[in-house]
Image (cartoon, rainbow, N blue to C red; front, side, top):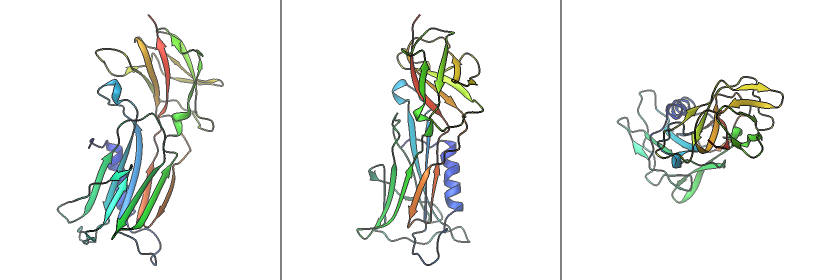
Length: 243
């Protein structure tokens, strides 16, 4: 299992804080679930580039910090597979699980089963709102170092303040990792303008920190709480730099 990043650990804390929410007359397992997504900024190789979905499961604690026993038949499923649950020193169940990187946005469903029946479900959508960014100029994506590229964000996604940006070379050997764009991205009426640094071959351009108002869609039934954390990355768009 991949080591979860700091934002996913923060998501776990939020899930604990929300444990026990919901109508008192509805039986709920004392489990809170969080799903977060972010670009794999620290990829060690080009084949690790993409967005990583991370799951955090936490059992709600009692006032003394310990947790009640849960039925041994309890099972949790996410990303199409069983989620390994572990107990800590306070007898609290929990889990952390992340996916392999992907360039595809998808819905996430988490279910809990007990005695062979489903007792809780959670569904998350719109976790990668910036994936719909498009390359406007140059239309063929062929660039040289110093060229200006224009990117339009996903329709409806505000970008009044522009964040940092990188190119992730996809073909360089040995792989040197991400390369800062040549200057701060700037916003104009036609899109976000960025300048290409020096690299070779095909590359993925990704912007970080672009603000958005689109919140993930989260539907929860049976869990104590369901929390979603959408990425604020924009892209990738693909260019090819020629020398």
